[in-house]
Length: 398
Image (cartoon, rainbow, N blue to C red; front, side, top):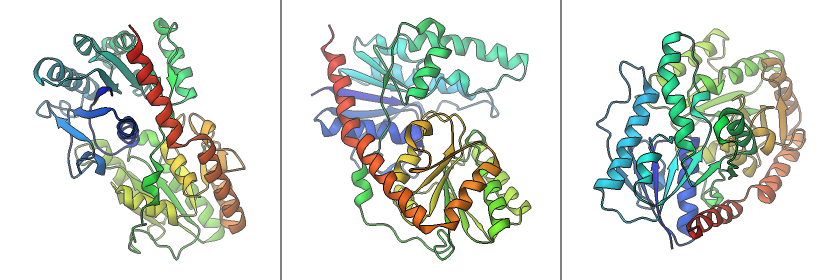
């Protein structure tokens, strides 16, 4: 048994959070002792396993600000994680053998003082997730970018979530060319998908309207969610049938979530789609399963997405996927077999959606192929075996 502490900046609802929760569940299933330390954990806005006692969670440092008037969010995210690291190493009194550090590497120098092994999960280089439109932004980001590269290299083992991210890792961090990160696809525990499906109301899921397209992603501009609405509008203007459900991670504390949610609603209104688009915020795992079970097709719009867990979940539920032909979906979605890989344009998406709308036989064929692909290539058992092997291998090093 290895005593593993996971540290994560904000244990809310999202793909990164789902991935790290599943990693903890995987190691726990192999007999390891796991717990979480995080700077924020809201029992009303988190995954069930982190609030029902399945996973122990300790929240520290939430009194620290997240930003100053909505700015310098990256800096404060770094500071909050460094505080969590200080608490773990010098205050907590916890006994542990390995630290699983997620997303933010700035705290690794503090974690190294514990003398324990450090495993860092790099979902994507943070320095690529922001724009530098002004010289002030360049000055602000320069030390953070330098720190990210230097501290990432201090980890004893680095995991990435796809081959695509592994390539970006080497393109981005010039001083870390000697490091070969391990690829660990973040695969969910599909046993949860065997639970009874929750019955959703007609306001949430208008099942009488077919085809029923679904988008699941955070309400963030980088997720390119407007593409789903625009493409649906173009397809709907041609065939006059169907419905779109926009289900997104939403946190009232995050200004972008609030703003972008309203921007998308305004877009639907502008395209005269108010009666044909449903917006849902912060759906639960049970609601997500119900949506995936009932929808005709998933629309996955992020461009150069690091991996993307939702297409895997959709294919497991025999739901075809239409995604942009870049990033993680190139490794998960098989074009023409389990769905369609498209250019990031509304015309390309609308064309694929029209194919889905015109043939129920095609939907069934793609759905069955998707389930088979997930079972063969992306099982939770394979994920657990790989992670357990990495942890045990890391602990066996002198």
